[in-house]
Length: 174
Image (cartoon, rainbow, N blue to C red; front, side, top):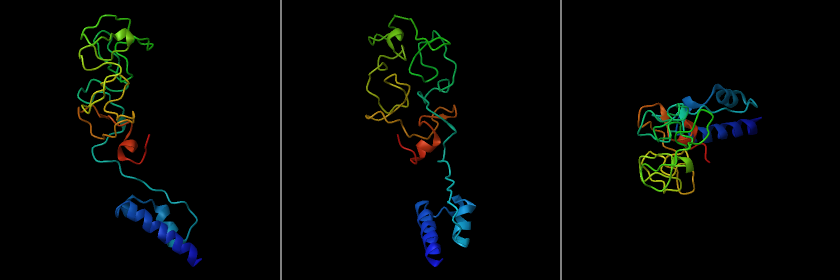
């Protein structure tokens, strides 16, 4: 019995230390387990990172009118809904527009997600600018195409660039 209590106490200490003294983040199951040597599996309730919001995947965190789930505005030359396509129809059929308004060599019909910037096109180098530069639907992913873990909402639309708040916290990895 004392061996079990020691194990539970050690586990409690490790969890507390890992949470940097955040004992209030541990559920009552952990307290019960350490007080009564209960075989209950401890659950950890992690606080959300400061500044994070529930939704994620913003492909343009400089424009509050661009985020996943936003209605695609056909004819504006932008990817409004962060799916990597600009001006697709209601059934997600790609645009048939073969003009190249920005002169980058890519049209909406072949995958340009922003026909107003010569720096944004399929295969462009992704830079840390809060915008999807390479038309894959993600902003500021790294060289290995891992999504950004930026948990700040830079444009006030309540959508962060990280896929979700858990990913932004670093507890979930690609």
